[in-house]
Length: 501
Image (cartoon, rainbow, N blue to C red; front, top):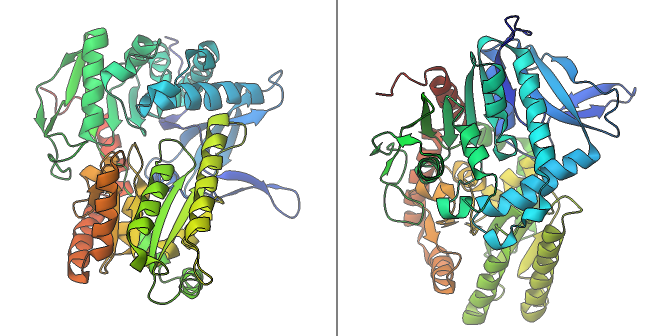
């Protein structure tokens, strides 16, 4: 290792997204604005620099040609001074590294859809090169014994490169997606390199104990990592009873002379911000418009996700169609608002999924619409966060039934928005949130019978039971916020051996 450490940051974040979006003002000057799409993680990570001033956030920037392009270092001053380092990637590199290798090769494996995986889609050398560039940038910025926190599967290899260059630093990694069972993960030809890289960390974090256990088993089976004695899961998790529950999980692994702490800690939301937004004039106006657009007495069902074969939108629409077939008395009495954000253009599988969703919604509307009633409203635009909060406030039922989802913050946000009120959350037991929200009506989106039973239960549930269930869920959301998650992760990166025996 070079004895001269370049850089002064004792806290470095690696995340492909920037903390702000780049824009220009009326004078043509560059300005930084909040992201249009809601993401509670990004403002939370930004706010960490209040306690860790002069830290560095490393992301990418897209360029036409790489020749002569260098990492861009920008001084940011909001919410406190920190540096933004942007690594130049060409359009082709972004397409290969992110849209193809990450989204088309890794995504289906992570979400247990192996039939969508095609090894020929991936360009592993470009993936390695991009991860190496992120790692080198982090090493140049980090001070001695700094904390480097790496985010998500598209930077799987960064920890191993960082460890090779800078053995002095503390490395944390948080896996925002599910981690699949070993038999599915082992499909990846690069499985050993990925596992070895994650085992270069001091801490590897996952949303829920099931994903932690899946990783621990993969590390044990594929590279021989020793598993520490299992412990009962934290009280914030539901330990038994559904598809993703786990009563115990593995607290640490030992490999290559090192111990790696494992931590199950789900990303939270910001319930106080949501409660404050409900009082804002703009949100109240959106709520008024939603009420005016929904005939009095009609039950409003909301489903919010994005266009993705993992999100179960087609299965949900078919369940809604079966509901209308069974229940003539509900014609004109229920409305489904499907907010299904379109994916980035150029990804064929998502374009096909979007076309299928739109055709299905059109067919159902064609079958059942009346002069004054269209059963399904569908929106593929990205709804601004304030408007979405208004939809949460007005929706009698929130129907969230992905086939697989790492966590699902929409479910938590709905519970936060309905604090002290009624409302029903119908939730897939294949979401990470299903082991956190005791009070949701859990369902199996692969089963027609269970989907049908769940939506019927939601429609028929009396107000008293709704309020009791919502109280339990809103308390769970408030007990572990996005801030709690961040502090939990960083504390355990910094004290990774403190609780290991």
